Length: 247
Image 1 (spheres, rainbow, N blue to C red):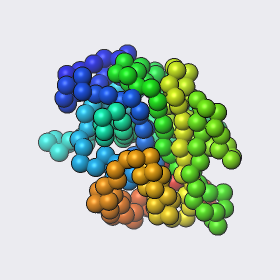
Image 2 (tube, one colour):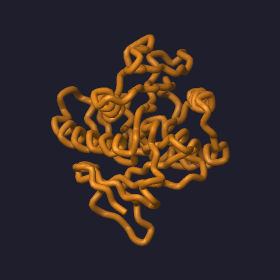
Image 3 (cartoon, rainbow, N blue to C red):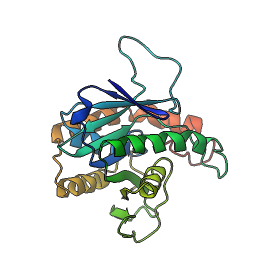
Image 4 (cartoon, helix red, strand yellow):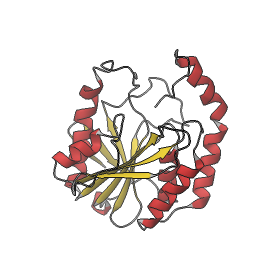
């Protein structure tokens, strides 16, 4: 079954009436540090995606393979009776220089607006974006910083966020949802900051979500298997002296 919401299409794997995204968590799977990926897969556990999101504004490679298809969809997985995890599997490449991404908004705005409208049509009341921020100093301990836009609860310092981490809550707030950002700080010197990962796990468990430790370890193992290749890409692509991680 397909529902069309402007520029975003929802493909349902089951009865759409069973989809109840009252509270939505949004993650980017490929974010540097991979904590959102590991956490999202762990709270999804053994649940399968209920909805695939496809849009003309997604960034999809022209080449693929079959039958082992690299799925271009974003996924929505219902993890309990009213909580849904949205996993963003691809995003437009970003240049870190200011004013160097002029087409970003034209791709991001219509798609994110229509996804939120689709979620609202199914009863969404709150949206939280979970992301990471690098520590300013290597000696800093990881911490969870929360910006609750609905209740005006602010973090101790400004959150420096890349798309789509700030766009989803910004639009959700303007569209009448209870919007928030949860950011865990991490040490950029670690491929995966396991202290920050542990803190994130504790945060979601404290919220009452089940955390599949077996899935967490399997995802962490998969990510670490890719470490050498990703490190090579990091320095091959960037031309600055230090090498900057790609989002």
